[in-house]
Image (cartoon, rainbow, N blue to C red; front, side, top):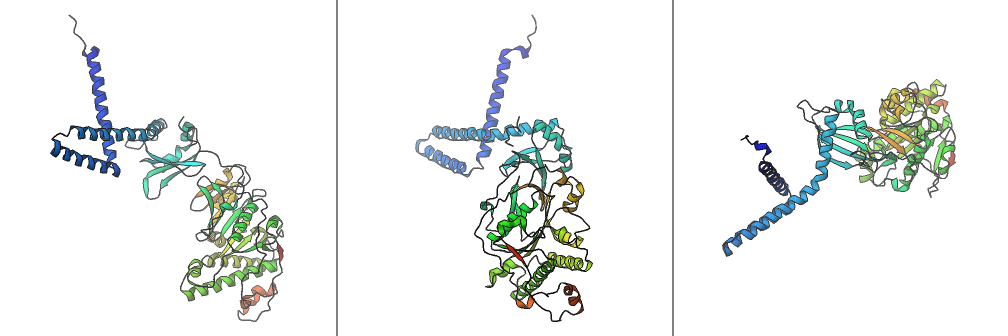
Length: 475
């Protein structure tokens, strides 16, 4: 008689299946029970059921009904927990297969462990992993990950306080090619001028952290449009606005009733000198009040100081003069403002068509931390402005810029249509008579160098006025 193979015995196979089901059932209950102890409501329920079980024992001597209730409570919670965790387990399983496929594996042969994902804006989602794979390896595998997921990876970041946590910023949908400006984007709570939308949401210049800015872009890139958005918000916030534009403010006609424009060298140097003197005056006030910035001063003193914003539409045009003495005065004045005026609430926002290291001095560049750079075919302007050639990789979309703050952000800047707003007519900067500048431009540099105490003639400067969808990611 042939010896029967136990593996061919149907009873053995059925027993294995039943054993596997029982094992999985108890694992299911155990995992759910562990999870339930993290839920305070379930802990309260268990305590009540145990108390009732004790009472039932002393009264009836029978606890079977209560045991059944406790079992049902645990089972129902396990079912709910399993349903809730199913998408996470499915996503975790997907990523495990993905990382094995692209060989994103740590030295201990483990793959990154999916933790969670969160939507950071309508355009992007952040997927977070626990990982022992170095960030450099993640970056090296970025293109391969994009091909396998059929999704654009905007950035790969390492948590600053946890080197074992890596985040993928995944595009859900592209940034729009046009975002109309609306006053809803004005931040009335903070001293911030918003300029556009990024994958992280609304992006802007925080005047308390970044007191000065460069806005760089070729003709037609939307650079002047960024300046218009910032001027509009500054006027809404009741800041004092000064515009220096050698094109006589043609691009800013929507502010003809609200902003004064300066376009003659004599008037420009007068205004900048006034702002240096105003900065000094404010710093003296801060010292007397025992504070070190405009925000604290306005909180404790009654004579409220408004922030003053100086917009320069084309810095290279201002600094291209062949008059070496005038150029020296302008450079020194701008360097002084960028160095000293941060805490005083005097801010420079300078547009420049093509950054050039021979035009912008190193000290001015080093003191201007906030950079907004449009697309350049040549990589050098991007490197000068951002320290990276990232702006040369931007799509050819008007209004698309790279913003350098603590990090780089691709931003679609707001399109500012000619908004007619009831803004106040232009006013002179609030400078006391004792701080008015000299009349003759030629005397500005020489007389101050020879004798700082010499009496100088005073005049009002001439000016012109004018108003992961993730469904693709999981395929």
